[in-house]
Image (cartoon, rainbow, N blue to C red; front, side, top):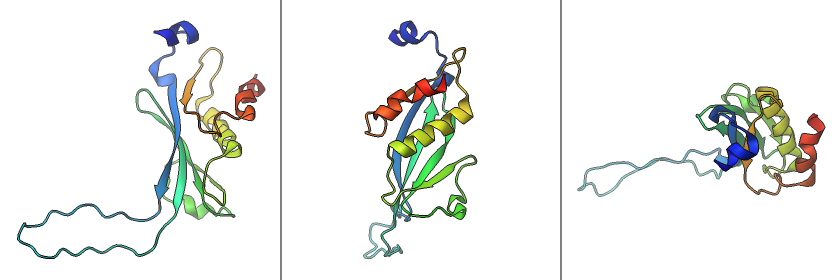
Length: 146
């Protein structure tokens, strides 16, 4: 109810939650169901450690999403690493593989390109207090759109 007073009646399809998550590049085997009397159960897994790729994404209140931005722990971006990613995904590289202010602003541009918010059709974006979300550049960013 409070959001309606502050933001007008924003329909659920225009309310987006934005967040990051880490995705492992290694297969994690699932649990196996075996007979109780079996003495030994074998499983094959890789000895490699894998890497974590950060995914920045937005989903709205009715379940629609903006294609994600994937942040790879690399120095150079090769387009082939986006093979199999959702259509419209963008990829960037950061040696740590983590999100920061620079990449968050790039994701916001990506978001705007997809949703094209306006004064007539605003979008409410909800996100946490990750340091990349609350930087001065991020706070001032909407003013550059006007």
